Length: 270
Image (cartoon, rainbow, N blue to C red; front, side, top):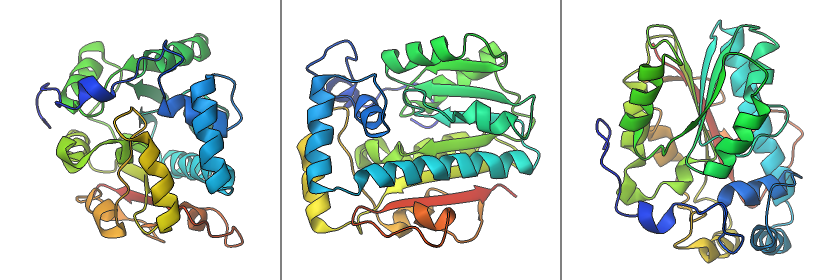
């Protein structure tokens, strides 16, 4: 899978039909939790159920978004001018290209998502700024994405790239080989490239993990993983401090702990 275009067997049962208002969409649930308007009643009901059980979830999604923007800023401050946002979700401010261009005005950004509605929203948002592209692609098929980027000349793989996997790898099931997904992108980028991952932690409270089972067999199905498993996805990268920790710890020391734990890590390819 890491090198080719073979599609995982689970794709057919979990790929979203974004135009169906009765089908749950992880991108639309996340949009709702961030205060967006691009969601349906099905998504709002699921978000409401999650918030009822996990009231701090609203704060946690903001912490996770803050972690993503910090990772973009760190990479841009290190001189990186290319960003690949994998599983980008529905656009919301501040966007990756906005954060990057505050530091690197000529930054190139490719947003990738397998949800057509997400890509349509991205295309509408990106109609003005040059050097930003929305690409329909499934991260479980990294070869397809890398081939399309290369064919269209969207990024220069001879220069460092920041790879962003923000809150997306826990939607990749174990049999879909998430480590190989990350490795496929890692192996195509050069020294000096960055990798940022945020991932749901299996150290979350048991009652939180129980709530999430309601998404089984949908495009919002998740598999939370341990700190060690999450760190293994950064193999080949030198980790920055504070390492693989709850995303709040990347932002400010006074932010509260949450029963649902979202791990964050940033590394640099030597």
